[in-house]
Length: 255
Ligand SMILES: [Zn+2]
Image (cartoon, rainbow, N blue to C red):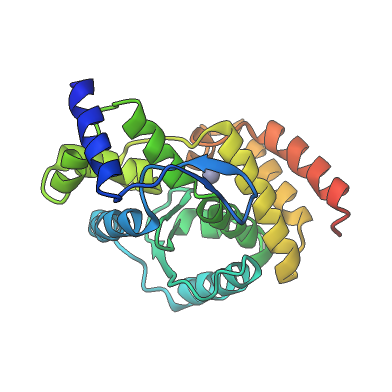
Protein backbone atom coordinates (compact mmCIF):
# COMPACT_ATOMS: atom_id res chain seq x y z
CA UNK A 1 0.00 0.00 0.00
CA UNK A 2 1.23 3.45 -0.92
CA UNK A 3 1.59 5.34 2.35
CA UNK A 4 1.62 8.77 0.65
CA UNK A 5 -1.69 7.94 -0.91
CA UNK A 6 -3.27 7.00 2.40
CA UNK A 7 -1.80 10.07 4.09
CA UNK A 8 -3.16 12.27 1.33
CA UNK A 9 -6.65 10.78 1.71
CA UNK A 10 -6.35 11.16 5.44
CA UNK A 11 -5.40 14.83 5.18
CA UNK A 12 -8.22 15.36 2.68
CA UNK A 13 -10.57 13.73 5.16
CA UNK A 14 -9.32 15.89 8.01
CA UNK A 15 -9.70 19.03 5.88
CA UNK A 16 -13.23 18.02 4.93
CA UNK A 17 -14.04 17.63 8.61
CA UNK A 18 -15.23 14.07 8.07
CA UNK A 19 -12.75 12.74 10.60
CA UNK A 20 -12.01 13.67 14.20
CA UNK A 21 -8.80 13.46 16.16
CA UNK A 22 -8.19 13.39 19.93
CA UNK A 23 -11.42 13.15 21.89
CA UNK A 24 -12.24 12.33 25.49
CA UNK A 25 -14.41 9.28 25.99
CA UNK A 26 -17.11 10.14 28.58
CA UNK A 27 -17.56 6.47 29.55
CA UNK A 28 -13.91 5.78 30.37
CA UNK A 29 -12.48 9.30 30.85
CA UNK A 30 -9.68 8.39 28.44
CA UNK A 31 -8.39 10.56 25.63
CA UNK A 32 -8.56 8.69 22.31
CA UNK A 33 -7.07 9.27 18.87
CA UNK A 34 -9.98 8.76 16.50
CA UNK A 35 -10.03 9.32 12.75
CA UNK A 36 -13.56 8.15 12.07
CA UNK A 37 -16.86 9.40 13.38
CA UNK A 38 -19.47 7.20 15.04
CA UNK A 39 -21.75 7.87 12.07
CA UNK A 40 -19.20 6.63 9.53
CA UNK A 41 -18.51 3.52 11.60
CA UNK A 42 -22.20 2.75 12.06
CA UNK A 43 -22.74 3.00 8.32
CA UNK A 44 -19.90 0.58 7.56
CA UNK A 45 -21.03 -1.72 10.34
CA UNK A 46 -24.58 -1.83 9.01
CA UNK A 47 -23.42 -3.33 5.73
CA UNK A 48 -20.94 -5.70 7.43
CA UNK A 49 -23.73 -6.82 9.79
CA UNK A 50 -26.11 -7.70 6.96
CA UNK A 51 -23.26 -9.62 5.29
CA UNK A 52 -22.61 -11.51 8.54
CA UNK A 53 -26.26 -12.53 8.64
CA UNK A 54 -26.03 -13.83 5.07
CA UNK A 55 -22.82 -15.68 5.91
CA UNK A 56 -24.17 -17.57 8.93
CA UNK A 57 -27.83 -18.52 9.40
CA UNK A 58 -29.67 -16.65 12.14
CA UNK A 59 -31.48 -18.82 14.69
CA UNK A 60 -35.24 -18.30 14.99
CA UNK A 61 -35.35 -20.22 18.30
CA UNK A 62 -37.69 -18.00 20.38
CA UNK A 63 -36.22 -19.07 23.74
CA UNK A 64 -32.65 -18.16 22.77
CA UNK A 65 -33.70 -14.92 21.06
CA UNK A 66 -35.83 -13.81 24.02
CA UNK A 67 -33.04 -14.61 26.44
CA UNK A 68 -30.54 -12.54 24.45
CA UNK A 69 -32.95 -9.58 24.06
CA UNK A 70 -33.81 -9.63 27.75
CA UNK A 71 -30.20 -9.72 28.94
CA UNK A 72 -29.11 -7.19 26.30
CA UNK A 73 -31.83 -4.77 27.38
CA UNK A 74 -30.74 -4.91 31.01
CA UNK A 75 -27.05 -4.51 30.23
CA UNK A 76 -27.39 -1.58 27.80
CA UNK A 77 -29.67 0.18 30.28
CA UNK A 78 -27.01 -0.30 32.96
CA UNK A 79 -24.49 1.18 30.50
CA UNK A 80 -26.89 4.13 30.02
CA UNK A 81 -27.15 3.34 26.30
CA UNK A 82 -30.82 2.34 26.24
CA UNK A 83 -31.62 5.22 23.87
CA UNK A 84 -29.24 3.94 21.18
CA UNK A 85 -30.57 1.46 18.65
CA UNK A 86 -29.50 -2.11 19.43
CA UNK A 87 -30.00 -5.23 17.38
CA UNK A 88 -29.37 -8.73 18.70
CA UNK A 89 -28.96 -11.88 16.66
CA UNK A 90 -28.34 -15.49 17.63
CA UNK A 91 -26.26 -17.13 14.93
CA UNK A 92 -27.09 -20.78 14.44
CA UNK A 93 -23.59 -22.21 14.84
CA UNK A 94 -21.77 -24.32 17.43
CA UNK A 95 -19.01 -21.72 17.73
CA UNK A 96 -18.41 -20.49 21.25
CA UNK A 97 -18.10 -16.85 20.38
CA UNK A 98 -19.84 -13.50 20.35
CA UNK A 99 -19.14 -10.10 18.84
CA UNK A 100 -20.38 -6.55 18.73
CA UNK A 101 -20.19 -3.94 16.00
CA UNK A 102 -20.53 -0.15 16.09
CA UNK A 103 -24.14 0.95 15.87
CA UNK A 104 -25.14 -1.62 18.48
CA UNK A 105 -25.15 -4.82 16.43
CA UNK A 106 -24.69 -7.73 18.83
CA UNK A 107 -24.08 -11.27 17.59
CA UNK A 108 -24.02 -14.35 19.81
CA UNK A 109 -23.41 -17.82 18.43
CA UNK A 110 -25.78 -20.52 19.66
CA UNK A 111 -22.70 -22.44 20.90
CA UNK A 112 -21.73 -19.84 23.50
CA UNK A 113 -25.31 -19.43 24.71
CA UNK A 114 -25.62 -23.18 25.26
CA UNK A 115 -22.20 -23.29 26.91
CA UNK A 116 -23.22 -20.62 29.47
CA UNK A 117 -24.81 -22.01 32.65
CA UNK A 118 -27.17 -19.12 33.35
CA UNK A 119 -28.27 -15.58 32.46
CA UNK A 120 -25.47 -14.11 34.59
CA UNK A 121 -22.79 -15.76 32.44
CA UNK A 122 -24.43 -14.54 29.23
CA UNK A 123 -24.66 -11.11 30.90
CA UNK A 124 -20.88 -11.30 31.50
CA UNK A 125 -20.29 -11.74 27.75
CA UNK A 126 -22.92 -9.08 26.92
CA UNK A 127 -21.30 -6.69 29.39
CA UNK A 128 -17.89 -7.32 27.83
CA UNK A 129 -19.21 -6.70 24.30
CA UNK A 130 -21.03 -3.55 25.44
CA UNK A 131 -17.74 -2.42 27.00
CA UNK A 132 -16.13 -2.60 23.55
CA UNK A 133 -18.85 -0.19 22.33
CA UNK A 134 -18.67 2.33 25.19
CA UNK A 135 -14.87 2.08 25.12
CA UNK A 136 -15.08 2.90 21.37
CA UNK A 137 -12.56 0.16 20.70
CA UNK A 138 -13.58 -0.40 17.07
CA UNK A 139 -13.08 3.30 16.30
CA UNK A 140 -9.68 3.20 18.00
CA UNK A 141 -8.62 0.07 16.09
CA UNK A 142 -9.88 1.48 12.82
CA UNK A 143 -7.97 4.73 13.39
CA UNK A 144 -4.78 2.86 14.24
CA UNK A 145 -5.07 0.85 11.02
CA UNK A 146 -5.63 3.96 8.88
CA UNK A 147 -2.81 5.89 10.58
CA UNK A 148 -0.46 2.95 10.06
CA UNK A 149 -1.32 2.99 6.36
CA UNK A 150 -2.35 -0.65 6.69
CA UNK A 151 -3.96 -0.82 3.27
CA UNK A 152 -7.01 1.09 4.40
CA UNK A 153 -7.84 4.48 3.04
CA UNK A 154 -11.00 6.47 2.62
CA UNK A 155 -11.04 5.22 -0.96
CA UNK A 156 -10.93 1.59 0.17
CA UNK A 157 -13.68 2.29 2.65
CA UNK A 158 -15.82 3.73 -0.13
CA UNK A 159 -15.11 0.60 -2.21
CA UNK A 160 -15.92 -1.70 0.68
CA UNK A 161 -19.52 -2.22 -0.36
CA UNK A 162 -18.46 -4.05 -3.51
CA UNK A 163 -14.87 -5.22 -3.05
CA UNK A 164 -14.70 -8.31 -0.83
CA UNK A 165 -11.02 -7.79 -0.02
CA UNK A 166 -11.83 -4.58 1.82
CA UNK A 167 -15.28 -5.67 2.91
CA UNK A 168 -13.93 -8.61 4.92
CA UNK A 169 -11.06 -6.60 6.36
CA UNK A 170 -13.38 -3.80 7.42
CA UNK A 171 -15.82 -6.30 8.94
CA UNK A 172 -12.90 -7.81 10.88
CA UNK A 173 -11.74 -4.43 12.17
CA UNK A 174 -15.28 -3.54 13.19
CA UNK A 175 -15.59 -6.73 15.22
CA UNK A 176 -17.38 -9.28 13.03
CA UNK A 177 -14.19 -10.99 11.84
CA UNK A 178 -15.21 -14.35 13.21
CA UNK A 179 -18.10 -14.48 10.70
CA UNK A 180 -15.65 -14.08 7.85
CA UNK A 181 -12.89 -16.32 9.18
CA UNK A 182 -10.63 -13.35 9.85
CA UNK A 183 -9.50 -13.33 13.46
CA UNK A 184 -8.42 -9.85 14.43
CA UNK A 185 -8.22 -9.50 18.20
CA UNK A 186 -8.59 -6.24 20.07
CA UNK A 187 -5.51 -5.24 22.06
CA UNK A 188 -5.03 -6.86 25.44
CA UNK A 189 -5.62 -3.45 27.04
CA UNK A 190 -8.98 -3.08 25.27
CA UNK A 191 -9.98 -6.61 26.23
CA UNK A 192 -9.25 -6.08 29.91
CA UNK A 193 -11.00 -2.70 29.86
CA UNK A 194 -14.07 -4.35 28.26
CA UNK A 195 -14.00 -6.95 31.06
CA UNK A 196 -13.96 -4.24 33.75
CA UNK A 197 -16.72 -2.19 32.09
CA UNK A 198 -18.65 -5.44 31.67
CA UNK A 199 -18.69 -6.25 35.37
CA UNK A 200 -19.67 -2.65 36.16
CA UNK A 201 -22.72 -3.11 33.91
CA UNK A 202 -23.49 -6.56 35.34
CA UNK A 203 -23.38 -5.15 38.85
CA UNK A 204 -25.62 -2.19 37.98
CA UNK A 205 -28.07 -4.48 36.19
CA UNK A 206 -28.31 -6.75 39.24
CA UNK A 207 -26.45 -9.77 37.86
CA UNK A 208 -24.05 -11.88 39.92
CA UNK A 209 -20.62 -10.53 38.91
CA UNK A 210 -18.86 -13.65 40.22
CA UNK A 211 -20.41 -15.59 37.35
CA UNK A 212 -18.03 -13.75 35.00
CA UNK A 213 -15.10 -15.38 36.78
CA UNK A 214 -16.93 -18.77 36.72
CA UNK A 215 -17.47 -18.43 32.98
CA UNK A 216 -13.80 -17.83 32.16
CA UNK A 217 -12.76 -20.64 34.51
CA UNK A 218 -15.13 -22.93 32.66
CA UNK A 219 -13.67 -21.78 29.33
CA UNK A 220 -10.17 -22.44 30.64
CA UNK A 221 -11.15 -25.97 31.68
CA UNK A 222 -12.65 -26.57 28.24
CA UNK A 223 -9.50 -25.34 26.50
CA UNK A 224 -7.36 -28.07 28.06
CA UNK A 225 -9.60 -30.67 26.42
CA UNK A 226 -10.62 -30.71 22.77
CA UNK A 227 -8.90 -27.57 21.50
CA UNK A 228 -9.53 -24.05 22.72
CA UNK A 229 -12.93 -22.39 22.41
CA UNK A 230 -13.01 -19.77 19.65
CA UNK A 231 -13.64 -16.93 22.09
CA UNK A 232 -10.25 -17.57 23.67
CA UNK A 233 -8.33 -17.32 20.43
CA UNK A 234 -9.15 -13.61 20.23
CA UNK A 235 -8.92 -12.85 23.94
CA UNK A 236 -6.32 -12.76 26.73
CA UNK A 237 -5.57 -16.07 28.46
CA UNK A 238 -8.39 -17.07 30.81
CA UNK A 239 -5.92 -17.23 33.72
CA UNK A 240 -5.03 -13.56 33.17
CA UNK A 241 -8.60 -12.38 32.92
CA UNK A 242 -9.80 -14.47 35.88
CA UNK A 243 -7.03 -12.93 38.00
CA UNK A 244 -7.69 -9.38 36.76
CA UNK A 245 -11.47 -9.68 37.10
CA UNK A 246 -11.23 -11.16 40.55
CA UNK A 247 -9.04 -8.33 41.83
CA UNK A 248 -11.25 -5.70 40.13
CA UNK A 249 -14.42 -7.16 41.71
CA UNK A 250 -12.73 -7.13 45.13
CA UNK A 251 -11.43 -3.56 44.70
CA UNK A 252 -14.92 -2.37 43.74
CA UNK A 253 -16.51 -4.27 46.61
CA UNK A 254 -19.07 -5.93 44.30
CA UNK A 255 -21.03 -8.87 45.70
ZN1 LIG B 1 -13.46 -8.77 23.57
